[in-house]
Each structure stands twice: as structure tokens, then as C-alpha cells.
Picture 1: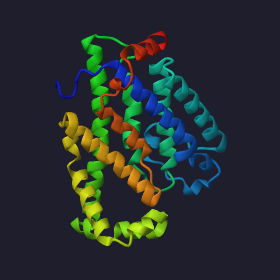
Picture 2: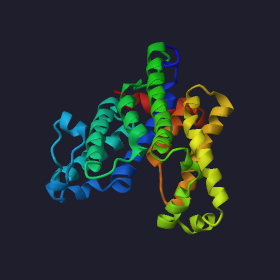
Picture 3: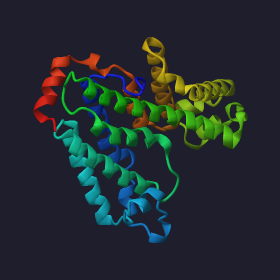
Length: 276
């Protein structure tokens, strides 16, 4: 059980909160802003996800999605600033569940938001202020561990999907070259002339996706190297194809000792006055 409840300083949670809520703002206004247009789409194109049926969420209207975005934005800004992080955190979590389930009720479901959505629901459960209490530190650890598990699941299940749908031949196929011809950048077009390089890239990615669960047990430099690979991988896919994985990438920070980036006292002073 200690594995699921490591003691993690609140300072690490505070920094991750700021990163996550900043990405939420980026997401609703830029990355996944298309739910705004869903308010004007004919109703027969709406095929609600099961979660919307379970929670009795209505079919979005033009006014509904605009108000929802405002609510999420205000709550995210307050949570980012550390104002009532539990209350504002829950508002953002349920608001984003509504927002994303709306986004994916009209077509394919992107798996890049899995870790972000998990993070939004577990961060409000972490300690709201700096403390040395063991129970609070373990709650921090559980929240961080759940985010880590969701990140690992994103990669591991992606590998399972590739092999189950296309077989092991996926790694030796022309899938990357095909993607580059559809939406590749100038750099991507250059890489497409080196098919051997694309095969190596695909095999490395597939193997490391299958090995992603190791990230839950690695420590120190091996773990940091693994995390760095994924940052480089996502930067590469953006450079080659214009495909970003920012919602997942921000959750990779849950594997890192973020509290070392800034002074402990600086964060503590920022947290105590505003904590719920």
C-alpha cells in the first residue's frame, strides 16, 4: 500500500496544479475549443457519450457552451492562483468533464485528455496547504500516483490498440509516412524520404509504449530519462505532423520532483493565505 500512498510534499502538488490549470485555460480557448460550435450543430448529429447519459447532461446549446466555458475559465484562474483550490478544483473537474464529453459526442474520442481529466479529479483531494502531517502527505502521494497511472495507461493502451488493430506490422508499416503526406510539415516531408528512419521511430515508440508501466517503479535518472523521451517524442510529433499532446505532456510532470525548481518557502507563503 505504501506504493499507492507515497509521501509527497504539498509544494509539488501546488506547482502541478498551476501547470494543469494553465493547460485547462489553453485547452478551452485554443486546443479543444470546438465544443463552442457544437451549440449550433443539428441535433441528429449528437451521439452522447455514456457519461453524459449517466449524469443527465443536456445536449449543448449555443448559450450553454458559452456559459460553461466562462465558468471553467473563472474557476481555473482561481484554482491556479490557489484561491479555494478544493472548491474551484471540483468546479473545473466537473466542468471539463462536461466540456470534453460534449467535444467527443460528435465524432472520434481523443485519448490525449485521459490523464488531464484524472488529474483534475484527484488534485482537489490533495492537501490544500503546506503541511508536514503524514496523512496529508500520503493524500498528496495518492493524487500524484493516480495521475502517473493515467499517463502510463495512455501510452500502454495506445500500444495495445496499435497491435490489436494492425498487428505487430504496424511498426514496420508506412503509417508515419502516410501521416506526413496528409498533414506533415516541411521537416516531416524531409523525414519521409528516409523510410528506414521512420521504421526505427515507430519501433522505438511502440516498444517504449509497451514498457510504459516501468515508469511507475523507476526512480532517479532512469525515470527522468524515460520522461524526457516522452517530452521529446511529443515535440517531434508536433514538429513533424502538427499533432500535440499537451494535456498528456503536462501530466508527465507528476513524475518529477517539481518542488526542487523553486524555493520551498516561496511556495509555502503562496499557498497558506488562500488555502481552502
